Image 1 (cartoon, rainbow, N blue to C red):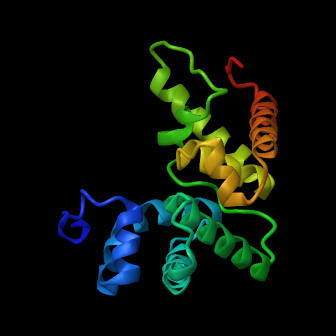
Image 2: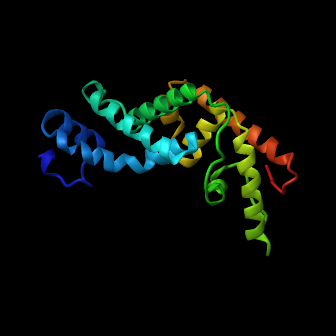
Image 3: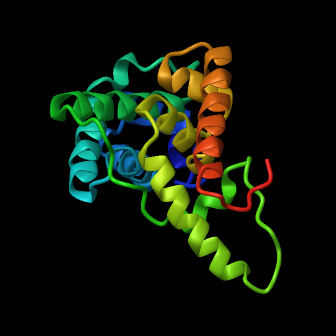
Length: 198
């Protein structure tokens, strides 16, 4: 029986079915699975730990309230990320934020952005640190529509299909947004006279 499987053996879909049909208290396991990932996603968009934590609570509450209407044919992670995305957008609209606090720890994750390759050499560590600062500044200038696709693709490791579902946009639009975002970021960085190869 599905209910007898251990936490790790259960798929998201199986766990959702248990919560919907027999044991609502196991919703805590869904929270355990997604709180870290969703917090990271929200924090990168919002820039405030406290605000991201508050929004995260709203996300889990909304997901719980709407669990009965969740379509089990869809991927659960895309469904809950879409709720998080919508909550973040609503927060941003309420606050009328036009700019975002720079992303934290960008130096540790910036090399995941495909269009960048770093020169090797003795000064590699210093160069990475300097580039990290410039990337931080460039990302801070990015419009939200570009920042959000970069966060989903390169920091949350979402596929184009998942991003399409989360943002409610066609896959070709997602591809175009990612391409433009990378181009804009690359152009901004070239303006800083940094040694990037495209």
